[in-house]
Length: 97
Image (spheres, helix red, strand yellow):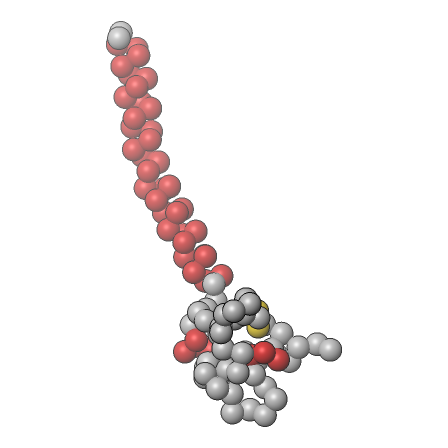
């Protein structure tokens, strides 16, 4: 290998090393966005496992994602974790129709 090829290889290596922290930072930012997109915590939303509000429960909420067949819990578009259809939180929004 001649001297020019060594310089190019070193240059490429140095460029990759210099860009590595940027790539790691970008990856961490994407993970943070995914966590945020997954929703707020149940505690932050005021989630309670059994609604005390007549007619207001997750099953009747526009944000609720019904449980898959054979499963007890569904999900929520705004709150993370397993969501019981009989639960309630402060983000409740009545389904249209």
